[in-house]
Amino acid sequence: MMTKLVDLARKNKLFEIVIKAFVWIMMAIINAWYEFTGFLRCHGVLGNQYSDIKALKGKYDGKRCFIICTGPSLTTEDLEKIRDEYTFGMNSICLLADKTSFRPTFYGCNDLGVYKKLKSNIQQYCGNQIKVFVSDRIKRNGDIKKGWYVFPENVAYHTYDRWFKQSFWCKFSGDCYRTVYGMHSITHSLIQLAVYMGFKEIYLLGADCNFPKGKQIHFQDYGVPDTTIDTARERNIAGYKEVKKQMNQYGFTVFNATRGGALEVFERVNLDDLLKEDK
Image (tube, rainbow, N blue to C red; front, side):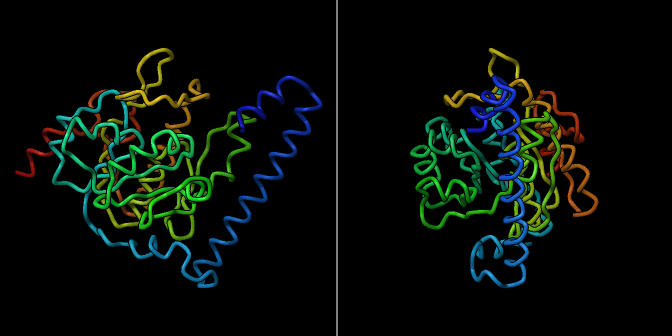
């Protein structure tokens, strides 16, 4: 929808003024609603909404986890190496169901288009064993399984700047019961959830952060094109930089265990050396 509005705004000056005003007002209202309801929820006014998320607070205090992204560097061999770790999978990792016996501890998806495309794969892949996190937008617009965790995701706070000003900035939430700030990737949302759940060491795997036009950007294509691929790297890096700013305040550290790629925001570690140290 936003892509169509932006395209329409570019075609006519009058349309541009009207559309920009409309989007700015709507996003301001939605953002205010999320902030207000989140405040009420944290003060016991909204009952049990998102209570399952609240129950996860600090549950894995002091543990480490791996967040598995979907860059082309991801391999089934590396997944097998971390099968005994706490792991978060996302999006198209469900397409590896018949290629490896590895299954993540948790799975996350916050994009409605991705979910609709992969819905049957996700439900079959996760079954009843994997704890699944989806955004409230997915719950409102898609059929989800009973027992899945739904998190309140606010993307309205920076939507106008992203689409109409090409300004990529983000917020980080330390209280996912109140809200999860959508940055520019499900990876960023899962980092917030992991911190909320108490994980102190977070390792990124498959976070290539490369988006070359006309070339492979995921370990496996799943037919959901990114209409803003030109700014994908810039947007992702903006999210990672915001995460790094919050590490001291919330007492966690993110490391990049990806093999290669362009993400240099976090300290790099070699996956094989890391796992070898544990033996």
